[in-house]
Length: 219
Image (cartoon, rainbow, N blue to C red; front, side, top):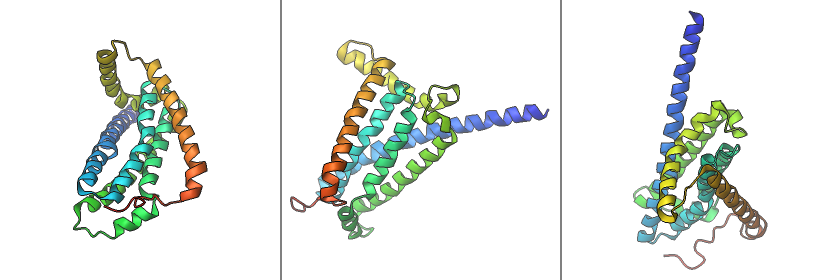
């Protein structure tokens, strides 16, 4: 009887964990992709250089997140680790710049664009921390995403795989397979890493935490 309840409890926890991970990925689509796109075009319309620069930097950094999705599709063992690094870097990128932070402080809550941007930054931070905490509960998945216990982390990327596969077949008349996704992901990761190293060595020492968003004059 005791074993029955233990087994039932484990099943309930497993279902709860699956729902939690699925919900995290859905929220990621909204807060990591949907809202930033809206804010980016909104900043262009309002001619707000600080928010526009913040989002431009964010999109460059967020490329790693999309690379991690390719690696998840390709079932690369360290894909979950890359995903967590990407969300961490994305969060850092929206708080890192002193000149942008100072500029945003000058606007009060009645200015909708900057207020929405501030709320989004905190939401992004919360989602990234929540994603990391969930990942740490399956710590072995950081280095072995193909194990049976990590299957729940691969399920959210399966729908994306189907979409990309259909698009790939439509435009190129060829099959988009998991090995192709893995190759593209690893190649993109290499290019991304080289670019990040170049920025760290050349631009970071020169500019520090100054984004230079007003270099060409403020709107």
